[in-house]
Image (cartoon, rainbow, N blue to C red; front, side, top):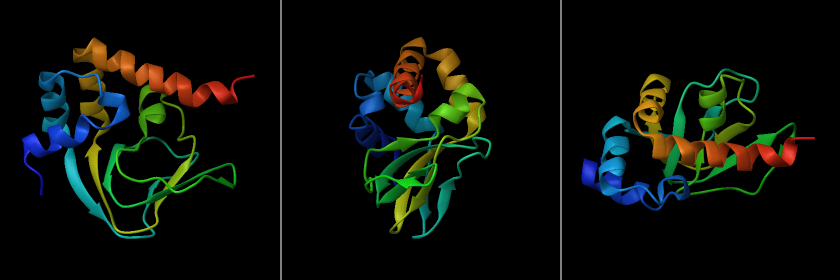
Length: 137
């Protein structure tokens, strides 16, 4: 298990948080739980309510949206922010392909972080818009 400073080190390599200050990264690390998942575990199911925000530390996940599978993704990828921010159902299914370790943030803590840290909120909203932009008509 990672200590807080280990989580901070990992988080600064996540594109979503790459511009955050050490203090901001510390706040994120404080509310993130480190969880191990077996291969074949569905972390997020398309159409279901958003339950958590995930940052993959180790392992590989598959993303599937409307039956289309995307190339496997690994460390430093993040998922779940769209459903948590918007309140919409999850936009994709994310399943582990190998044993995977992730930092996981519960919805209430994630929303509180965004409310307390406008700079992080802007980064999340920017990411949100980048991910949704290709699907907007």
